Amino acid sequence: MVPIVPAAAIFDLGRGGNFSARPTPDMGYAATAAAAEQKEGHDVGRGNVGAGTGALIGRGQFKGGVGTASVTLENGVVVGALAVVNALGLPFEQAGPVAGKSVDPPPLNTTLVVVATDAVLDVAECKRTASASHAGIARALDPSHTLADGDTVFCLATGVVALDRSDEAARQASLVTLQSAAADVVRLAILDGVANAESVGTPAGEYGAYRTA
Image (cartoon, rainbow, N blue to C red; front, side, top):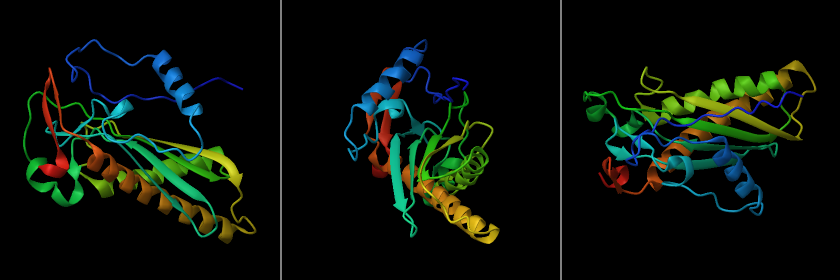
């Protein structure tokens, strides 16, 4: 066993007024410990919490944040997503006018997503699920996956519920259904993060809630 822990942080330097402030391994450990102390089924903080505290969207014009969504498939498999929305773009249906506006200096953007399922997946299937989940970012935000975005999706599988692998056709159908659902819950988690973000004023600027813009 190699103790490698995948990790990422959004690019929000200076938005709280102190450009030298950085996340540390101790913060990650503390967050994990705090999550482990919560009862199963507890409400997840959304909006301006955790990694979403300094998140912005729309070329730095509006507040971004943390969002979540999940779905239970017909076979009982649960697929969920947690997104930290810190994006160049805006929610897809409203993106047009702002997407063409130039900003100098370039904004700092990183949308981070964790997709989690209780299905039994191997490493290769987790990787493919993470790749498929990127479609949810493109469905939610315009523009997305730009040179100014550091979009990343991690996939976790707890290995509790077995998929139908009775033959190759059944295996493929099970994975396609799961991965399609993963992309959709990513889209919903991103929109949830934007919807729950509140207006803030910081030494770096005033950032309004997108839903009231």
